[in-house]
Image 1 (cartoon, each protein chain N blue to C red):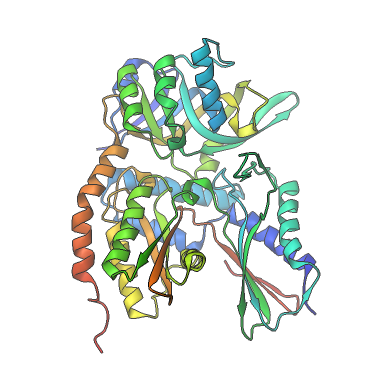
Image 2 (image 1 turned 90 degrees about the horizontal axis):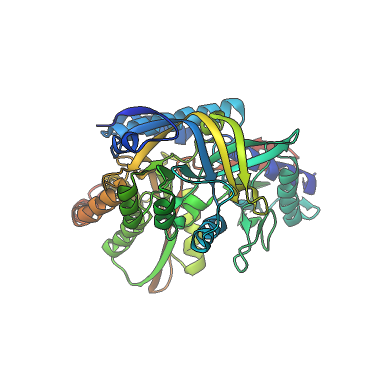
Length: 210
Length: 289
């Protein structure tokens, strides 16, 4: 069962906890995006040093999106954006989720069990944004409201922007400890024996006999 | 008449530009079929939005994905072809020109593996492989920019006198390791035999083969059919959030080798970047994918 939701940001804990894995969501409001490993490392360094980030992430929606942005008439605009693989940020995510009480994180490919635990504790979901939906996601951008760490590559910077109807994204990990990624990986591993049995049983069946 | 520097530069740049804005027709058909048949509701919703995105990008000539990848070309040279000018440099200059003129601009994905510095240029980039085709009077170029999402899940293992079961089990294990990551439904290319480097090349060419061509060798055709069914039994589904559509195709190539048998597996994500053209000695250019 997959329910569609249109969510207004910032998200309340109740709104987040009402979501279930496999639900579909669209977002309205302000999100923060970055696609940078150095960015995640720097966020954690700031947390450890007790320093404030250039963009406050408290209760935020932090998405692993890479985007091309440029300055037009002194204002930054994001020309296009698209999700990037979240799994490479896994070592940093549990701490970032817990420290800021993030309400949603997202990108593609999911996060690990440790991140899912952090999400369950704080009331946060992981949103799977299908890759290759660049046009649809870019059309949801309304304006850039803040940019942090301009010394980094364009798609590594922290960019805060307002979106309207950003989606669809699938709830990949909900705030109740359910992870489609862990479940499907376990399911596939559980099916391996049966898959090999049928590969073996069917081998050569379609090959004409000489 | 000849295949000139100018033609090579312009055609390789055009192929790259087109590959970012359009997914191949056979791939759209495969996604439509998957959308009809997948038994999982989330999967069908995801496939529908993928098709909508592909149509929007093609119709509006915008990027399908923000990861424009790194430039990868497979070039097949007819032995009757005459060249004029620096052809290797033409491919590199074509990419430079694309970077300069692309609207919207490309992101910097070319990465120095030793320093992790990123830019638009780097050692040996564009990645190009060349082959000879006896008797042809044209150059055939396939452009398949590789992005991070699918690129990082390729794998290769070397076995000694393996059974088909050992080979197939390895392929399924690589699929399980990739799981939700390479933006399924994927295209899987498998290369078996030859040498370490040649197996990887075979896998790449298998991955780039158009859909629906039944393999001429019954034992390989049988393997491809069974492997596709097997991969689609894993349950990862579109974007790895569940479903029956984990792969659109499994293509296998092989070469004879010694008793050591490399098995290489490569993935393309659902947008299956693949554009092709031929440049003839006459100067005629045929874009056919």
